[in-house]
Length: 102
Image (tube, rainbow, N blue to C red):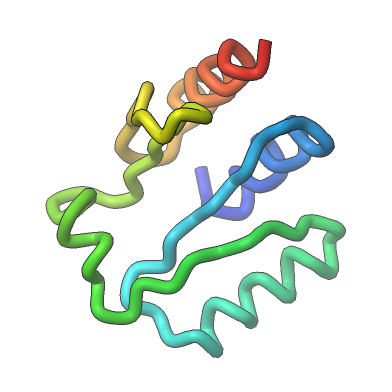
């Protein structure tokens, strides 16, 4: 599963709900991230993205494996994590988000 599938399956699925999808770029230059985001925006998918040019966030939360996915509740507590992209993990993330939105 590629990164582009996550916006389709998560961002679109929860569009208009009290949900924020916030990927954090790992060490990429701003121009590279903007190019990717503009490609998604052309497909009607738009969301914020964080930049981590010095990999400070990466070193705190994902230093040994990427991608790391965190579901964080409205109180700021991490309630679910996964490592990597695959259809089953993505569906588990969606299930956790749905449970929090109820």
